[in-house]
Length: 200
Image 1 (cartoon, helix red, strand yellow):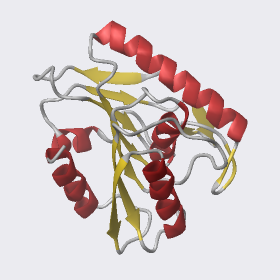
Image 2 (image 1 turned 90 degrees about the vertical axis):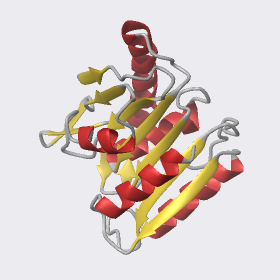
Image 3 (image 1 turned 60 degrees about the vertical axis):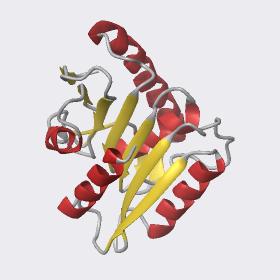
């Protein structure tokens, strides 16, 4: 997978896995990593799927309707990429914190839904529930921050509530942060994510 790796100055810090939104690239979220933790390794990945020329992490059938077969395949692909990257770049595979926006947040959530050890935690900006009707792994050691917009036309508020509930039921510690905004990534929610991260 096309990606950028930046070695951090503190090997005890988590490796920040950056996952862009639809139409983004591996450079989009680099400023967020700097804001969250300037000492961490950064692994920023570009999605392998193109939708009308725009990179994504998995296919969708329509707005808000995921191609489940592709979601499952791409989640496995990303998880295996993380295994390989941890060996190649010599970072702790068990200490990865994902920072995802929109489509990137959805694939990060999907990693947690499908693979217990994929992530230590996640910051999810405007995510949806990746899959319903499946048993989640035990996520009791995981920490998750969800940022959502009360007026988000792409990601209804109920999606964020449902995602929190499912992660809670799997044992994760989840903070849900609301902004009275739409689907855009706001400075305020990034600030809130930074405060949450500092209290880990």
